[in-house]
Length: 181
Image 1 (cartoon, rainbow, N blue to C red):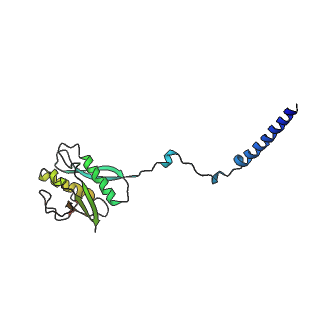
Image 2: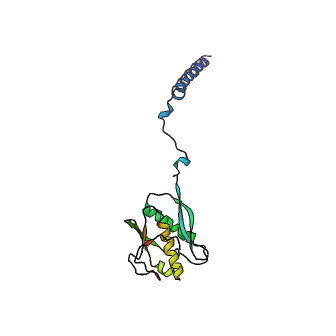
Image 3: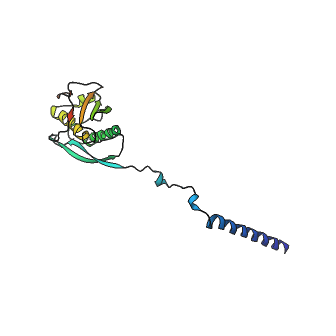
């Protein structure tokens, strides 16, 4: 019998302690002071996109047409140009003729006084088959990149050098947007 009395007293004490801690740490607890636990969705980087117009040849290679595409939004202008260049290359891979080969490397990009300098490897010259293709390549890049705020003209370099011609056209001058091509 004494065992049951002692056991009941211990149970009573434990019950009182439990009630005390429940009130103090559950009912009266200030949850605004707790550390926030993030869900997996909160940890995933939120990517913002922006729409840009890229100019690519139509299926007959007779003119350039604007195509609206979404790219990852970035404040870094050279990263933006690289992303857009990759979009142009990828968007023209299914054309019946070669336009911009994937082996053409845009080596360097720099902007000075609203002039964009594009430095390509020599594969761009090897890629060009005729005058029309060259003209479309030049103005695909010029019309697309001069649509970016702060870029008015484009200058082409090959392997870090100013060349007189790509293959057919003189590239010593700066190119400005021409939507008639």
